[in-house]
Amino acid sequence: MPLLQRAGATVLDLDGARFGHASARNRAASHGKAAVLLFVTQDVEPVGDGWLETLLQTVKRSEVAGAFGRQVPRGASPEEAFMVGANYPEQSRTLTRDTLRSAFGPGATLFSNAFGVIKRAVWERYPFPEIVMSEDQAWGRRVLSEGLEIEYVGDAAVYHGHQLSLGRAFRRNFDSGSSLQQLKLTGGVWGSGLRHLSQELAWIAGRYGVGAAAHAVVYESVRMLGFQLGRMEGLMPRDLARRLGEAPRK
Image 1 (cartoon, rainbow, N blue to C red):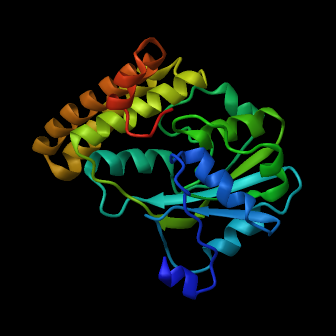
Image 2 (image 1 turned 90 degrees about the horizontal axis):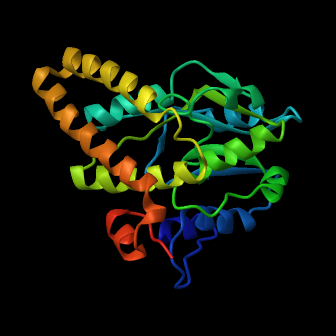
């Protein structure tokens, strides 16, 4: 933080409040003054120069609410690298209301506030909703349903990769299942998940060997278990949900 402060940045802390993905981002956005808000998490690193200008160019049209860029999984585990590649391909695309007709799943990311921009006027009308996780997907779904557009920009990229233990993979996907269940985006999860798994195992086996593919079976089984249990959070005692999930809960 001293480095940011010396550079003239305004540094905010939680002031004793419980962390929340949406609340933290909304609070930061409320301190912004520009017409376009940039969201970059602490664990991403831009690839090359010109990425910001590229993102800003895409939101000049009045119907575009925001834009997000490609994520390159440097240092990620094979499983996470495949997931990132599916969600953030090289080719750009425009997301519209028609995008919501497709089943949600791997490769169907609607927005990412790990690396993206939003018009301030749009954020003021549609701030990130207070859910456990996937607040960026909820935001993307909302603005697309209102007839606005979101640009995915493959030419603007950051490095962003994870190596998760089985425990963290379970907890993160518990949170994901809980949030996506609230958003009613889990209808086709088994079909899209099994297709994703078959493609993932073939990719990992070809690149990393059969042993890595066997580990991926275990990893994805744990991830899916966490996701499915997260879908049932509403039926659980609150203390149990707090133990199974990673994000703080009320």
